[in-house]
Length: 435
Image 1: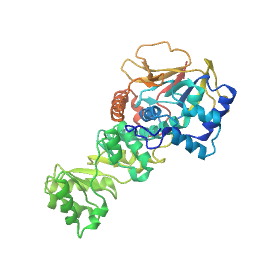
Image 2: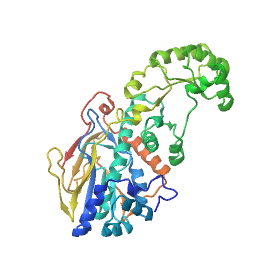
Image 3: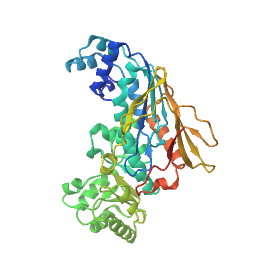
Image 4: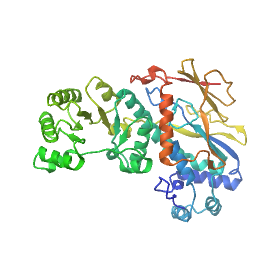
């Protein structure tokens, strides 16, 4: 059946997969192994080059999809149209309902190489179908969140606004906005993200609006007439300093903000602040945009900037490199299994994971083991129950789930060592210890 009315998914989640999962399932049904109790784990073998941590994001979206994971008439017809016509397979899919268990790191938590961020236990015939869905969601959202966390850190408390919708796929844009807000961005330009997740939205005008009018003053008057004096005026369409003078002349000293989108932003912001103050607009904020990333934000630390608008570098691969998560079978019928391929080895057995902290609360190590970990002072168990018997342990609306994840991220952010926030390339800031 199609996604439920409350679902944020536009396409049935069961079709967001790779065909090889159905090929494996058909063969397992034929030889009787589809019912074997199986444990799959999601983990990253390594972090992107030079990154010191990863931020887990997308768990809430994955659970939303799992709740709608059903093959209805339309989905089965779509499979038949693609040549999937095995009667045993189609009968199995027609009655499929996820009945397994899912555990994972709390969304918004940090992770490191080998961290078992998601664990699925179910009959093979159910669990195998979740690979592509889980990886596409977690890899994408975690990449955005990990990049966004670096930007929030570089901003040193100044607000960051997500505005990357025009630089990525239309649905990826919504997920990107969610992941950015999870790690501390204050708002998004994306209306679908606002509607779906309760994220504050913001936006005023582009250069096209100024060019539409006979002169800059007319454009500013039109915007002020609609949005009020608290709006943000884009002042660099022609000459930035003259644009600021015109903005204050039209709006008065109570103008909310000016936006700078070109040139040397450190110089531009400094001149803008000086000019605004000289015109009596001492409360008018300076917002900067223009292909910002964490390095550009850090370079603006000493500039009189009040907020940053971030787009391309947050939502594209250059700024948010893939996290390389994989979905591997580690146990079947209670027996550990492991892959031994060169460079792609896995560790058998369902994992336990705790994070160790010193007396001051700073994280010092991540202990991952196929056996229960002997507790020590200041340990924090990392795996929490998410699904039991196919039912969500803590069902929440998409907006509520995002809020909980964002709050968790804020709590754990202060536990990382100070070197985590360095923008220089380095190794993972916490070692993963096999026990």
